[in-house]
Length: 294
Image (cartoon, rainbow, N blue to C red):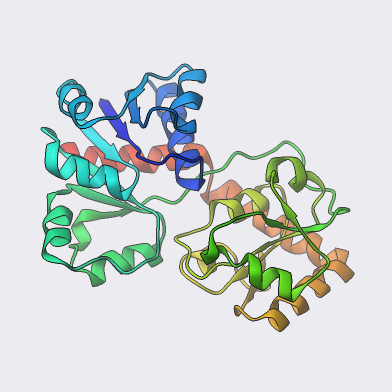
């Protein structure tokens, strides 16, 4: 099986990290793949550094490269458009956002062109179905994250991802809890974090929340999109309304109750081990590819 991956992102966000993890996992399974990404994009450089075949994205490159592959995997909306216009082979599209699908006639045409959609959560699947995408053309393929050897000591700060995206709720977090520290490097900070605060206006699933859970760190998350599928209230974390008082109360509880943080964190780690590993993501993606090619 030969797969061409397309991603038009110029920054390294959750979707790009997941695309890189997937390509590495598929390569380890003997799946031949290549990436087309913008010149200078971090994903392009990191894929090359990992020993993956990666070239600069352009319409001409899509036309030229695609003929040597069995299918195309589009990792974002712009690459979906490119494939709809140019792909000479079947293509699948990862859908990672919980926004309503555009129903303009051009968008409907583009969505009909895809052979399969890989929805990151059941919430995203419902968005696709509401837009008229047949259930048979949707596969739910959640994110996968690496499992660190050791869980968090839970002796550090309550942290929140640093983000300039206004939809990610940083302003709400600042209003809610002065004790929450913003982190620009979760891999550095999670090994000691007491909890992760993950507030968002909209969320397909939340790969940063999964990363925290893999470290045994409980997550305080917004009750939106796919987040309730991984942050089970009172089990793997705490779900809150997007209101400063609710966020502050949850942060205070975990700051003051280490035993509660440990219990929620351990349950979150077990959930990742059972359902959200990179290996499981790769296997479910391969199942989706086989559906496209069958």
